[in-house]
Length: 342
Image 1 (cartoon, rainbow, N blue to C red):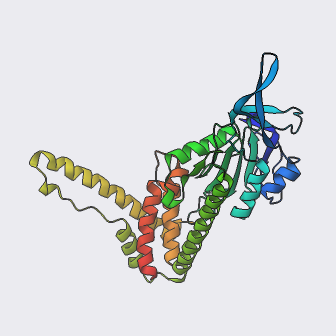
Image 2 (image 1 turned 180 degrees about the vertical axis):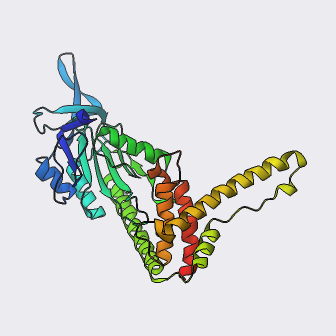
Image 3 (image 1 turned 60 degrees about the horizontal axis):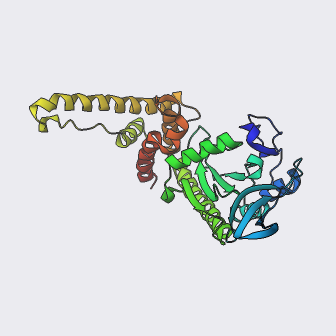
């Protein structure tokens, strides 16, 4: 929610935010410049010894420490966030921003201080594969807590965070879609008792971004090959589409008599669905699609346009196109086209 944003310290590159607390930036900014120039340096974190009065004398409580946030913005007072032991090493917001700039090497997409400064996030737009017409985005998000509740974490998500609710949406999506091999979902989490936490967080940011760039280059090279390979006949298009989405063989004869009819009906229903997919993609390639070229790239565009705009969906299309059934169907076509492209 908008009221969870601390001292109106929130940033968005170019795109207006729903809560309209501040105007979006018209220029790209580093995470460090956002804190220094937009938020007047932000705030710092420190540990203070905890004492109690015993027999009228202030006495240190073993190794207990209070996590203290410095004054910032219109809040002129220190604020105690939690109590920890002396092993706790709080991160500094500006140090997180510097590490982000050093490792990601991209402008920040969004950033904010939340809950009186107990939490911050910085996001960036991951390399865009431009494989579909939906202009879907995947965001890398660094999320750091300063009150012992959240620690520091790195995730990717289809949700662009601009407030507490949206970063929660992003976290929920990451929780449900984590696959480290594919660089999505929850990728790293650590606590401030790890004195190498900032270093390790930086390693993971750099790793995720570099892998995404390499994959983007590989995808771009593949797409270039598609655009350079012409379609030679109408029959070839139909063959390619059928190869990607072939009809299932009716094996109901191999089932018990009591089950064969139901099996046959299920296969028939599935084949009808596959025929709709084939007809839909061919129709788009044959002239109904948007900017379809007479090459393998045109077949690819017809496929992504069909799954992105025409096939009915029971789940959010953004999720399905990026990582769900639509993505799996699109990858079936990618495998076939890779054979034709050589």
